[in-house]
Amino acid sequence: MGNIQSDGTSEDLIRSFVQVGCAEVHSKTLLEKYTAQLENGSIEEEAVNEQVDKINDTIDEINELAELRRSIMLRLFDMYEGDKDYWCLVKHLGIGAYCAFEAYQASDNDAELLNIALQANKRFVKAMSRFLGTEITDCAACFADFIKARKE
Image 1 (spheres, helix red, strand yellow):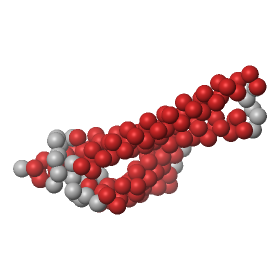
Image 2 (tube, one colour):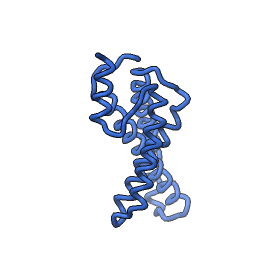
Image 3 (cartoon, rainbow, N blue to C red):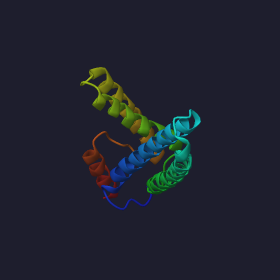
Image 4 (spheres, rainbow, N blue to C red):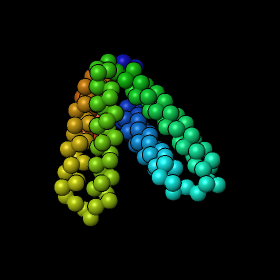
């Protein structure tokens, strides 16, 4: 096993890269919105330069978020001896699981949406286990306890 610094670091980094990845996707959505507004003519002529600035700022934000997410994922990966082939799968499943949970939150307690979110999270946990090369449990406290036991 790699250089694990604390029992809680792994869980926090997993949550962090998923959240930063979600912000990256949100910024991409804003970029699409701003670009569409410009392309479909819904921006007044005098506001075009301001809209172009918003687009450029959003592109910069996406690049900064991607760089941050990558650095978090790399730090997490370097803590273990896992399989780098799962890099993209982990990224997509983590963001997908979170988005599925947001769909449930936006619903009126739709049990099917909750089940979808839970199933997506199970796939994420399975892929994350392969990415890190160690079993990830659904419960963060259990995972911390497992890591602590492996260190002893």
